[in-house]
Length: 289
Image 1 (cartoon, rainbow, N blue to C red):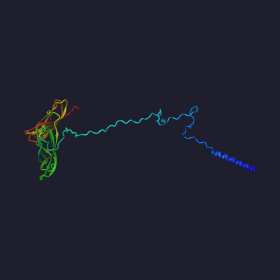
Image 2: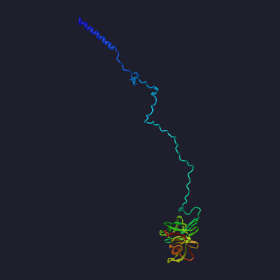
Image 3: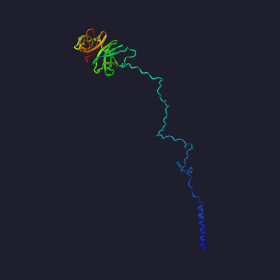
Image 4: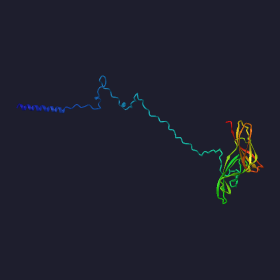
């Protein structure tokens, strides 16, 4: 009986202790956002006050060792430069350097290259009149034709140092006539050909005929310059106002104040009577250099 009572007392006591544990609340952890959960941070153990809410949203100042970088300030936008618009095309100044022409004659000038005729198996006579105001050289294309009028060959002849207003009727040697019996003038080139030296430093005279019947000429150079010189002299052989040939002579080693003569052949056929020669061009070479 006593044992049964003891067991009953122990069961009652256990039931009371279990009920007390079930009803005792567990210690809960403080909320994360609770300021009461922060440990004291002052020297006296007191908690610091939290910063105002307005300070939490203010931008932080840059570190003293790292200066704040300011964005570059854009400069004023420069307008794009446009090329000027020309209302008219600029004019190009005309060339002043003379060029040889290859036409029959300049506009408004008298026709300067006249007729041609075959004078032999290897020769042709060409007539040229210089209608300009300056001494000129002519390079002339001559086309040769057979008896049927067909072209058989072409040659170029040269009429050099023709003076203004002068007419030349000269016979020229050709090597490419190929049996042509007639001729026609082709292209013509003209070049200014004035003498750079005084032509009065040389004179010319008819000396007679050579064994082939062509006129010989004598050239006399007188050195009026300040140095001994060589001369290359060209003279026109003229008969009855028409130039019929040229003569060229080299006169060398002319000392100061001295005169030296030289005889040469010309391209003009005799007779010598009635013919004269006149200096038209000089090239002079200073021997002191």
